[in-house]
Amino acid sequence: MIEQWRRKRDILTALAGELFVSGEELAKQAGISRTAISKHIDSLEDYGVEIFSVKGKGYKLANPVSLIDEDKLTHSLNHRCFYFDELPSTNAFLLQHVDELTSGDICIAEYQSAGRGRRGRSWVSPYGCHLYCSMYWKLQHGMSQASGLSLVVACSLVKVLQSFGIEDLGVKWPNDIYLNNKKLAGVLIEMSGQADSECHLVVGIGINISMSQSQGDKIDQAWSDLSANPSCPSKTELAIALQKQLHQDFSTFERLGLTAFLARWQEVDVFFGKEVKLLMGDNQIQGICKGVDESGAILLETDNGIKAFVGGEISLRSTS
Ligand code: ATP
Ligand code: BTN
Image: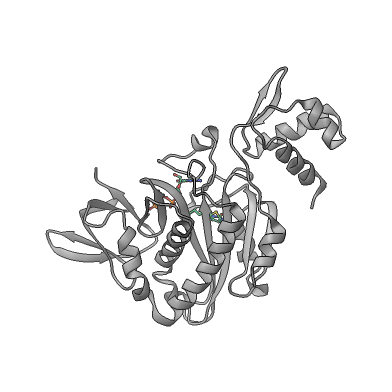
């Protein structure tokens, strides 16, 4: 591990308690000067960690920061896990290495400098606060096979969170996860390769664990996190369970298609039976959401009957 990250991790561990810790105490524990401690604290803030600093008292984390236990992670999985303190994006990392990967390999980073969402949007990714994880999967029969897969990922995520006792979850087509009607997690699927033969799939998942106020202010929609939830698992347990569930569900999807997941989707579909609008570039269409079909298209009932809509450029919004 790079020395500067080892130091920062030690400082975060020392600040994990309820009480303020003085700069002098931190310097003594780390065997470095108070000036060096203060530089590390400034740098951690640049990485999105919110730290209270009070003259005469010292420092304290505004929100808990939890780091992956790399040993536990690698020993619990039968696949490779590439783990970093910082990366531009875990999706970008796997896409750069597709030729060396096998289905089920994952990449996790504690911080993303260019975390990405759908359609060029950015994903807020402060150090240590949330889970940023991507998994590689090879599709033998081309990109068309991937249609509907984003719904499978959403179903996998919900199942994993429920298995830890987290309730009040929902999904928004095609693949957002909601907790108490606010966005908890997002999924970004990216592909490279051939349209009709072997192609590479990278499935990126961001789950909010503990958002600070200043980071949350950067998000332009209602968000939620798991911090106040008594059932919140450790980030390592969450990552392990997620990799296993995705592996199992992708194998099922390859054998049986989306049909095997439709009941699971409908159980947690936030907008089923509700009035919604679909935004498609400059156009929008309003109707009642009737769930999804076996290709993963959203079904909308209008005065002209029920029509299916599909495509990465469509955004679903509530009308209320
Ligand atoms: P849609 O894709 O249906 O338009 P969306 O508005 O959620 O849904 P996405 O592209 O899926 O858009 O997600 C990116 C958006 O998610 C950002 O524009 C921002 O509003 C929000 N966002 C960014 N980071 C986070 C985060 N850590 N937690 C929750 N929401 C976030
Ligand atoms: C969305 O809702 O727009 C999708 C957000 C996906 C974020 C995750 S975090 C891990 C992976 N790496 C990225 O750069 N994006 C995805």
